[in-house]
Image: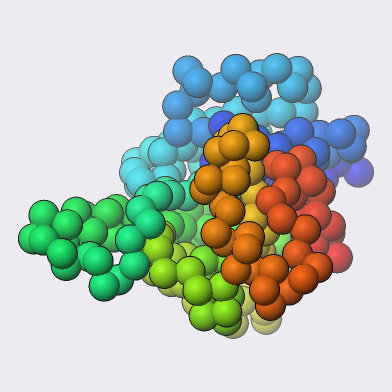
Length: 246
């Protein structure tokens, strides 16, 4: 029996490698949404007739509507929806540095509004479009992609002060997943927020990995000596799907 996945945000990083991993099983098909269908060379290179690439800018309700008009013509159900599309604002300032100047503060507010809009609010509109298809499926799974930067425990223990805008938006996403779980449990839908770990999702060189992740790795190993470090996208996606396919 054909098993159908939706991967939102599939043009690069975790989303792209999830598509590759899922399509290694012949009985799987994937609807992969991307913001720009003119920039999907890596997806097309997969070369599977069970891959359907659909344009979807999750910051636009019109784009989401058009995306699901296409998807609804091709399938009546989706077994597993993985919402991985997100906006990552890479600031390393801690909260105390955000008011060093009025310019710095205004930049933070702008980044926060954008991050919250994409990483939390848009996820609601997107999820509500896919939920009817999930309810009509056999597995009924809705998966949000979370992050360790949304963990209060990890933030305290690893002393991660930066990425405030992104972290706040992902905390909101984690709570949103819990609220969806509360509402959808009576309908048999499983809702999870899964963190893929510390991942080299942008094909960084080892030097770049050491520079960007080095302090976080060092801090994490102080309270978790068994921490393996930064994962490749491929390894992270295998672990992620193992959690999904419980």
